[in-house]
Length: 306
Ligand code: B12
Ligand code: SF4
Ligand code: SF4
Image (cartoon, rainbow, N blue to C red; front, side, top):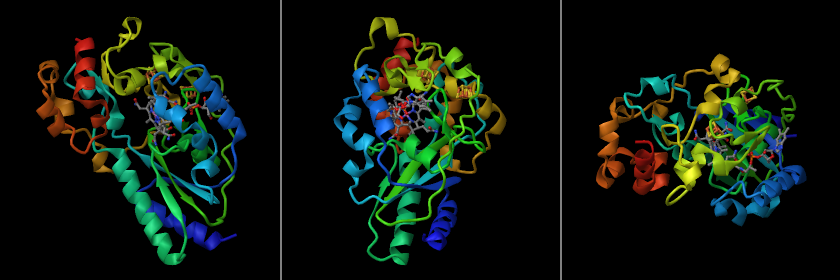
């Protein structure tokens, strides 16, 4: 059904800057909904009440967009080949936030795709989602054949590893669907689980309350004492992805200059970070995802690692 339009949509998605694209049929997802509810009931989300608040929509696409028929799932490669060792400071800073805010970049590409489609199919309804919408990005990416959810819980692709951002365009029209990605290519590997310094990973499950990414970005105020070891990370954490053989073998360098580190991220020494003030924070992280943690969060993380 609509195979001409489906393949044109994919061609356009590549043209608008995405490296991965697939189309999933909008269906209910009772198993994933149940997993989410168990995860929440175990308190793994900690203070991320915003996940719980819209859990019905996250677990059921039709609660979010009742007319949904198709989900175009896209991935954008952000691997730059800079390493933590290239940073002149002892602090570590997650690579996904080195450059411009990915939300804006993916949203812009998906909005172009929707505008293009509106010209082709007048009256089509669609919604653009990137991260903050109450939609489980990884589930739809797997259903649209982009890859599988690894034991570290991130979505891994065969051709770029897991260094890809995800987003969706949800539409009220039928399209030609890809087969879900059914293989689990983690095999017997447990490198991510073994490397996580805070034991935040079970198999295919994250205890977010223990995860350095959660603690440095999402947790407000002081950290509980026993969780105050951030292992030098001041924003996010990349350890479980750095050790993944799929990233070591299959990462490809992105040509999106937006994701390359701002010069300060590379050049700053510990004392530059330690003397950063609110004005400097606003200037350095204008148009960056780091704004999420606010100046208070970043300076708390710097202090805890000093
Ligand atoms: C909440 C959140 C977080 C939380 C919780 C992480 C998590 N894994 O859920 C915190 C703050 C810790 C976090 C951290 C990071 N995040 Co985040 N995060 C999200 C967000 C907003 C929601 C994810 C969610 O729904 N979690 C709820 C739990 C229940 O979902 P889940 O872990 O996928 O759980 C599933 C499995 O446990 C599964 N399950 C249970 N048993 C089994 C058994 C088997 C066999 C299988 C296959 C599955 C399975 O069932 C659950 C439901 O399907 C998404 C964006 C979005 N809207 O989806 C981004 C997102 C997942 N994050 C992203 C990124 C980049 C990161 C970081 C890498 C950032 C960083 N460098 O610091 C880290 C990675 C940490 C990690 N190891 O996951 C990307 C991941 C891209 C990708 N390739 O997958 C996303 C998709 C954002 C985006 N749009 O690109 N994040
Ligand atoms: S991001 Fe870091 S702390 Fe979180 S699960 Fe991965 S290795 Fe563990
Ligand atoms: S490190 Fe190993 S177990 Fe973890 S996600 Fe990668 S392949 Fe899977």
